[in-house]
Amino acid sequence: MLGKVDEIRELDFSTMGTLVLAGGGNRCWWQSGALRHLMERGLRLPAQLVGTSAGAAVAASFLAEGADTALHTCLKLYASNPRIFDWSALPKLKLKFAHQHVYPAWVDAFLNEATFDTLRHSSSRLVVALTRPARFLGMRGSVAAGTLAYLVDKYLWNSIHPRLPRVLGLRQDFMVLNDCSDIDTAQALLIAAASAPPIMSARPVGGAMAIDGGYTDNAPIPHQTEAERSNTLVMLTRHYPKLPPMFRWQGRSYWQPSQRIPVSTWDCTPKTTVRQAYDLGAMDSARALTSGLLR
Image 1 (cartoon, rainbow, N blue to C red):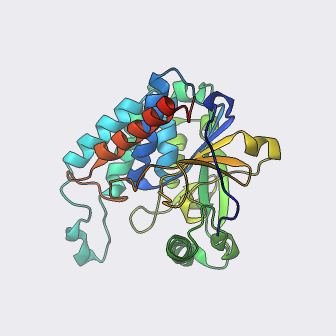
Image 2 (cartoon, one colour):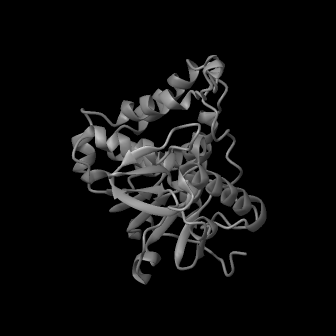
Image 3 (cartoon, rainbow, N blue to C red):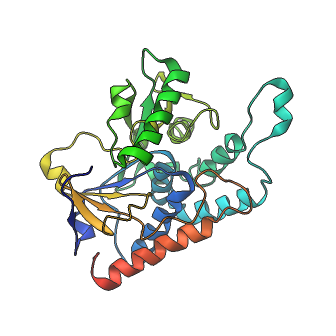
């Protein structure tokens, strides 16, 4: 389905101009562990980062110098949250998920008034992908269409960048987090990029409603020239068993986890194996550096 894929045997991280962090909820801790290991070995983030959902938040945590804070806060929030769903709201015919307060609290831990200026003046620019609902489907219809497209992509087509959501009218929008005028706007952008109704409600951003960018493309990439494609590395959070750890496809480089990331995407309770996902990322990063696959 993917067409021609070439295995990468050596990649110079310093030549990458764009780093894309795919979404994936808790699976994005793999990205955090991998990047932390690279940064500890002296490598620097590219000039442009692109992300959506938790992938965008992980990227923001590094730019705000709060990557460690992000991990420790997540573990703390999950440890104090006994369940995903609050059944007490059912008599009022309301769906209340823990993510509605856990995710904003997590974002606020690393992106706040004290760290906002650090992010704004970072040497890396973070482009955050959002999904705008299809005009003829409305919000509920767009969420249903996006979910259908996800299932078709995952179980039937097994593609990396799906086309079906756009065919159904969903639109991808990109906004630069560094350009936000204040902390409230910046936090709203990150939270909207991870909002998957009914787990997290759609939010107004830039004068229009927005939902999780993954509804359109879980590994979002703005329009690129051929030269920009050749200097782009995409960090996936899904494992594709038939593909090598790093590969080139359609002119870009891709890096995938060495195995299925051992964590539930949406769980936010004490049993969530965040640390295992993070450690797998660090291990994959160390292995890539030691073998010479990445330098």
